[in-house]
Length: 131
Image (cartoon, rainbow, N blue to C red):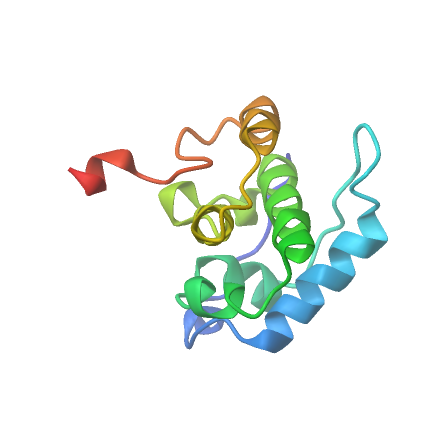
C-alpha cells in the first residue's frame, strides 16, 4: 500500500456523473478481469469522491455491469491505495444495495468481495446501523 496526499477542498459537494465516468474509464484501463490487476493511482480530487455523498443517486443511472465493475474497482483499489480506504462509507455499499434492489446481486460477487478486502464493512455496510 502507498501513502497518498489528502486535499480537504476536494471533500466538498457530491459525487457527479463526471466522477463516475472517470472511475469507469480507470476501471477499463486497469483490466479488472485479470487475476491480480494493479489499480492505477488517481489524483486527490477523484480519490476524494469516494467519500462524497450521492453514490446512491448516481448508481441509479448505471447498468448492472457498470455497477459490478465499480464494485471490483473500489474493492481492489482500497487494498492498494491508502486514500481509497472508506470503511462503512465505501461506495461499494450503495453499489451493492442498488444491485440487490434490482435483484441482480450474485452471491458469488459477495464471496469475491470478501476474498479481496480486509474492510469488514464490505459488501453490506455497517450492519449495526440497521438495528
